[in-house]
Image (cartoon, rainbow, N blue to C red; front, side, top):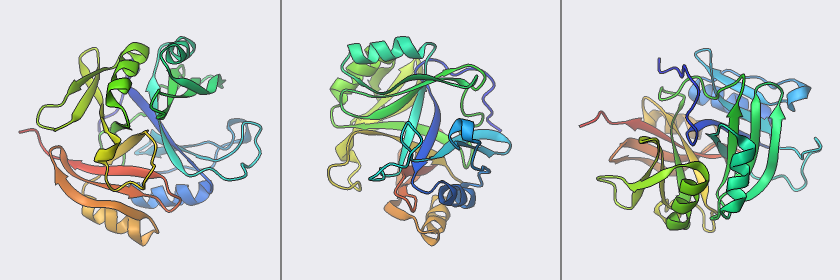
Length: 266
């Protein structure tokens, strides 16, 4: 089992969570699709649900709400958020604003678990920052039902490359064998990908720049069939590409994500 046994290096995607109008419906959907276990959390965490896979934390699901705990009106769309690890959330937040990004939710402590912030890059892709204390992030990755990849789909790769390099220490380099695709690396280790937003032709018009989580599966075709039976939407059906066989999907509330069965290295 690919457990994470140490802290995530700064700049590495370390967690992802889903904000939805109906939290219990999302918990039920992802339990059936990926085998996650999770329940609505206590009031002191705003009901935040930490979902587990094989006993390890794998992702979060929360109900959409305003900072004061009230229900938003209008209700925002369901959305997955990728969190990047940082050793100092406040310092990274300052680097973000100094390099053209914006702060959406300033740094705040989450009990003794860590410190978080939500920001957007200069191309308007929203992501989170996580400074770990008691909770490092996902405890299992790269296994069916767990996150295996995170990808920035942006309207301006050049601007994004400069921003993530300066603000978060991520280096963008062209990926060998993949046209117009970039690897994002920290300390020489590839941790995420980046491409132009237009590459995802299946997305609705005017989709903004965003981070997209990929979940590993044993069989993209059967997982896609299960998703449709549960009310989800296929944006792009399973297809073969350089890294394996993948599909682009939406859950019944509109949360967009990808699934992939990776190919063995050549």
